Length: 474
Image (tube, rainbow, N blue to C red; front, top):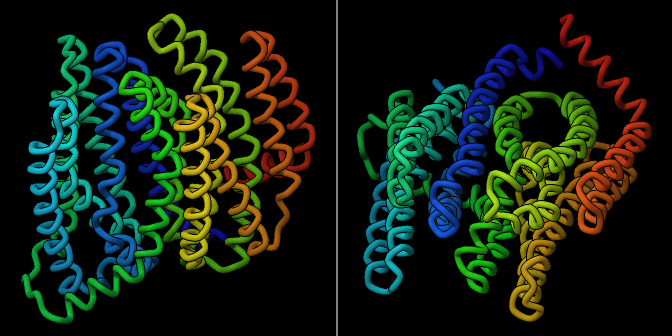
């Protein structure tokens, strides 16, 4: 396995991915715990609305980035056809810039609330920036140069942490300034990517039929993954849209804080999956299967344990952010997202990409999206209960994770049904105990349930400890 996965480079990439995620974690912690206190409910709501919209701007590449990523996964950087890839970057950049101008003009003409106009304008400016970083970043990931992409993330996040610190010291409460400086961090990150992708960028700009043919081929390859990613984003996004539409920016702000807290560690898992993709593409089937079994067991145990963090978090937020008490109620329902989404992001999505099962990924994401839309619509517009909307998000995410795990386990010739049942029982115990009992009683109820769960995983834990010892010695 050591040779197959290229462990020396794998761990080097993983270390930088970890550092990148550590900076992201610090930024997320600042945004979740300090920025809401400075900006207030409404200002933080608009700032989160910008973050929400920019999470979708990566879809405007129409699958081009995904196609290049899938076609070149596992290749060497020097073997890339730069004369074909370079012009595709510039075509995409110009189209995204033109689209940004159109959105800015339409926002100024048709939107009445100027705070929302600023959100749309700044989100539009982010379109060419985020997609350009994504284009180069996907190439770096595909050719196993994830260290470069990780450093670009570190630069972006560290810059924003620095300026956030200055803004917080100055007690700046203008969300527009926060967003502008967020964009500036992306500009700096883009320049770093451009420096290391100079062979891609500085090519003779020849827009031949061959280049356009290559663009359409990459889009056709990546379109399944594009729509899959869109569906994946909308599973949670539609529920947030319903909350913004029905209950306004204040409740959107509270729900966004709960989602930020619930998904703290998901970005780290995404970073690991980014490193895994090219390594797994170069490995053999038996090595993939072995890695899957060990990783699935490890995630099952650790992600369920993360729910224990709710209890100290509740005490802290109760005193630190008294305006956001509703966020703690939303968090009871949303915190289990980290368990389901963690396994989905690191294992299911990564393995489906490696095994070129993008069509299945699209299918399951689309079915889950339909479920999410139906449940969120009924909860928001018919029942008109915001907690029901929040529960709809969790049910949809759990459904997607469970279906994907069952399918992947069949491909890996493994069984996971009993594990899924035990983990889902833990989630139900966590939600019900926190919903009906005070924090201390619910803590001990969940702790007892988790200890029983660990006892059922006794053999797995012994095997994981044995592997850890081998890694430390070897």
